[in-house]
Structure formats: C-alpha cells, structure tokens
Image (tube, rainbow, N blue to C red):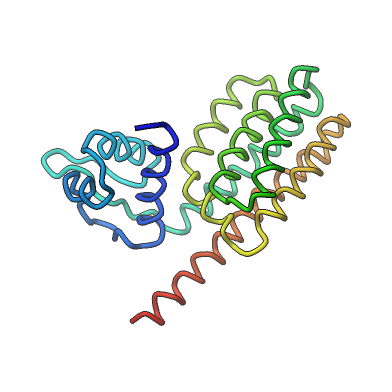
Length: 221
C-alpha cells in the first residue's frame, strides 16, 4: 500500500471516530475494518497503532483497539496549549531564521497555495503540516520543535476536519500569508500573535463543525 493510500485509510478511520460513527467504547475489529475498507489487516493494524499514539483509540490486552472518549474540554485545552506553543515558535523563528529556513518556509507556503487553489482540503492539510513544521524548525529550539510536533500530531484529526468548514481553507491560507511576512520581516511580536490567533480560530471552527454534524445526526433520527 502506498503512503498516500495508507494516509487515506487512516484518515477515514479518524473521521469515523471524531464524527461519532465509531462510538466511544466500541471495539474496532481488524477483520471487519479490513473488509469494510477493502484492505489487508496489516495496514489496519498500523493505522490503529497510530491512532493509539494520538489518543483516539486504546489498545487493551485481550480486547484489541477500543475507541477512546476524547472529552471536548480536553480537546479545547490542547488547542489552547498548541496556540501558545505555535506563537512561541513563530516568535523564535522571526528572530532566528536562516536563509535556508526562509526558503523552506516560502516553498511550504507555495505548496499550500496550490492545494488551496485545487480546493482539496485533505491535500491542503498535509501541505499545511509541512508549513507548520518549517516554522518549528526555524525556531531553532529542538525541544520546542519536538513538543510542537507531538501536540500537532495529537490534534491532527481535529485540525484536518475543521478545514471542511465553509471558507476555512481560504481564510487559513490568508493567515499563512500574514504569518510568513511577519516571520521574514523579523517581527517576533506579530508572528507570535498571528500564530496564536491562527490556532485558536481552528478551535472555534472545530466547534462549528461538531455543531453542524450534530444537526445532521439529529435530522437523520
């Protein structure tokens, strides 16, 4: 299975968990999932292991993978912390970025532009991930880069799905443009504030997404 196909498989299982298709406490049977998605058990097992690493499932002895119950308050708290850490990374990047960092950031920004123009939210998310990693690297703080990367992975399902809220991808790219300018201008204060606002907005947009999903479920009942 190619890397892109695996990402799509994992993302579909993620979507099912975050949107409530797979309910908290439900056992995710590898054989049933393999049949459902038309794949072997090996990529299913790897996907479940990755989802365990970010807290969406729990691997329990003799029971296998169980859907975790990520309390909304916990998710919101993670976004709050992520906003502060991203802001710090942006401030450091504004002060410390090198010519190589500048080129990496501009290249990542250009990729985001192309995926935004194609209106492909999932592709945009992964290009967006590269963009944020370029900022972490430009901070030249190894510890901060590690912590940002770890929390970014924990929030991946929510950051990816919130891009499906109407106009969010276009707004996200516009925010990226302002962030790039602030960092390359060496404006640490503006970089910190712009990145904090960028991530906090994602939290609010995710709330909107969950509310819309709840409305659809209520109409279907």
